[in-house]
Length: 449
Image (cartoon, rainbow, N blue to C red; front, side):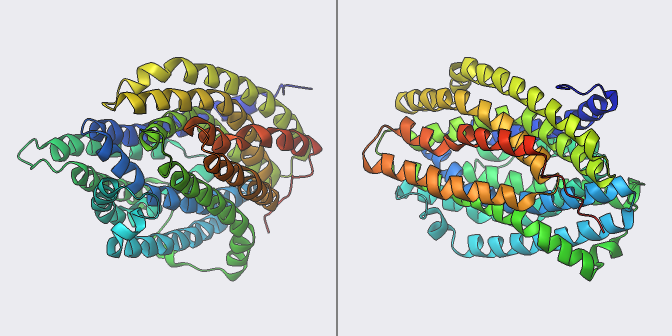
């Protein structure tokens, strides 16, 4: 049967994916507001903030690994109804995530210019980016705490709180951006530094709301402050065993993105860095819906396998593949159609606008593959328990295909859009691996004790 007739699957997919997708959309809107409002200051400001946010990207990738470990393990325990183990898993993840955030904060606060210079040699971009990074790095701990708690709530099918938190963050961030970037409501015009301060305050608000909800409102997990310090050696070993491949896979992607930024930062084509910033914003926008739905698939997969329903999971897996292939085709067409209106939101040079249009055209093709393989490899294979396979697959594609091809294209002085296409080529190629792996059904593994 190609499409399952189990109405509870569609209902769960719908009820979980909407708040997750909306939260992603709101989070994207925060980043878009920063990008567009700073974009009014010109190319140098856009490039500086983009490079300053590369460490935030690294943090998000590592934090995403921790969140993935929490979500995959906790969702399976949720299928068994074991909330005590979920609280301990969340606490372990939070401690790991905060420790990494604190390390990055220290490095970026002490050496902001040196960090930015890893990605570009342009002195204006380094100066602007260092000013932004030296402030925004203090938001990292708050970000990691919030995201880990949101992952714990999602694992027990409470997805709406993430949306509420992100909405509050958006409101705070946009108001403070307006005040601090341009100098309104009595604030001085601080430009890119103002955007960094606004982000820091918004992250603090996020954490305060999330902690208040977890400790005072939630009744599924009934967290207490002492639970965040709880330890369990068995679950710690499980978290490390299953979490390390997830985190390692996320770090592979961090290396991919950071190396990609460094490669594009050395392009001779005018406006390449600005164009990549705009194109990646479009990519993040397109990813909002598919990521929300993929996250919902992951929760359903973990709960179904944790409950011991493997045959039902096979039906769900076939249905997921059809849904996400169709979603990819629709998303790719939409990305292509909005490319020029979207670019017009930015006050950038003609060269940057032309390059951005080419980059987004590339994305309109690769996003089809992203949609299918992301749902298949994360929502099904990784969430289903075969975590190490996804890590190995990503490692091979990044270090043997993506980065070598981009370096070769750069060395041959290929146009910037071709280099960009090399950096995105795996999104199509991994589909061939995904279709074989998913339909083998050898990825369903119960990870609970």
